[in-house]
Image (cartoon, rainbow, N blue to C red):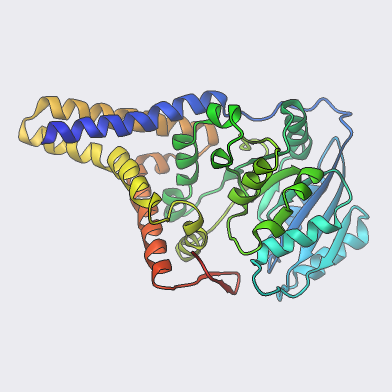
Length: 375
């Protein structure tokens, strides 16, 4: 029995490691810009109660180089003075515009409605949707635009370097890229324009304005939570090409800074990703069998004197931790996220199963003071 378990561990852990090794080779940051590119970009920031973030976000955005840009911030019913901060900046810098969000219509998700309004206000041919907690490097917009041009893309996105300071952040947040680079084969996703192979990050997403409109924009998934999945997939469905780049040198973000926000943030759109009745059992086998079970089987096999089983399980454990370490080095994750990797996988599965069970019971997702139905 132990030998069969260790063989399964080696197969599942090896799958993750091999896909990660391949993806790390092709997962690259865009080339540096030498100046004079002439890109015209509308940087679009939805903001709801972002008084603690918006000034720093605007500082970084307004420092962009080698692009002609406008910065449009939509205040989505803030009560903390976000609008006043943006209005003051707009009064001193003509590149900044503040628009007041309209009341949220029935059937719309708050962020999708905000981004829809922002896109309607945009004047430039490239749209860069940016969350207010993201801090751009000075050459970020120009490099993303050049990457789109070189690869003939309609949309490109990337995960900013995730700032993690508390233990819960270090354990959970790095799992986003563990899943992306461990289970989405990038070479295949680039060769095929299959919508199911599309993925993205709503924190930092640049899209050609014409392709955005053909795909129906954010209105096409007005009642959905996960813009990072839905917009790239819709762009592919309407003939555009999409890709994900390594945004580690382009931007940084502290996504959540406490456990309740991590739980709520990861739960709110779980049922649009992993937490589906058919998909989640498969993900559980892949993640539990490939990341948590190998060290357990190795320990049990060593204690019971089963060297062949122990050897296979140790190989699986070593491959997973090697791939995990290389990923952490590339995207600058905290070393504790590697050491506690099996814990991170276990917590991720816990959140996903809780979201699925909650959805089956009719629970609603909560975010930014609003509640939404989930399916």
